[in-house]
Image (cartoon, rainbow, N blue to C red; front, side, top):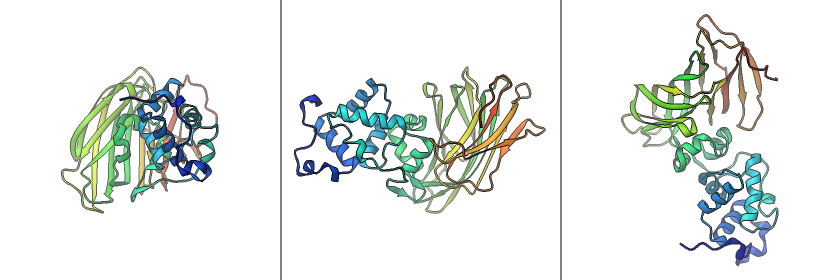
Length: 323
């Protein structure tokens, strides 16, 4: 298929809308400029990548459909690059961005795609792992409570995750839960054992240090019906080490219990639990935790709003963290 060189194309569409660009939204201007350039979104993505800007196709699609807008520093740099790639006047896109606020289309109760990106971050490993399926991630489910236990080995690496999760169907037809787990220390292989539910496929993605686990309910749920899944993921870790674990949730939870079990031969010198409202926010609090007799620490917040809840720890030979 022939693709026109955008440098030979006018910057604005030859329609009446082009005479009043200030009245257009960011999404409308971006969509019109991409269409008029003759470039596919894949070609736009490649042009951005050539400038060192890694933006997923899903994110670009959301931007031009108005489902989300760029917020992070990397995304704003990508907007500046898009103006050059699409031969738009400087600031033609950047000036149309709105101040940060929750926005986007609510597809179902509890499934706000923009809330998902705020918590996970734009172009997150979850988005990269799921690709086009990211926009449909558990779209008919809302998580009510999570209890999870993390186990580290003597080399300071997470080697097992045990998860028990209570979900409610927000519409008819949900028949599975998809979970994406990432490992900072790296991940060579992964397998899952399901105690409650039926085992689905497990995809190990070592290039992303990520495992995608699917647990099936055994039948389609009716609206407002609840289901419990209980599974354990074991991994062959990489060569790095782990110094934190966090749960990112796009909705308020009734209950969240997070436990971290350390190996007796690899104990941290300090542990803290923390919370962040979104991926780009600083820690809202940083409370110290004391290990118990089983060399474990836990977090069980009395209230669990949407956002990022985690536990961080410092190894004996690591520099003291500020804050």
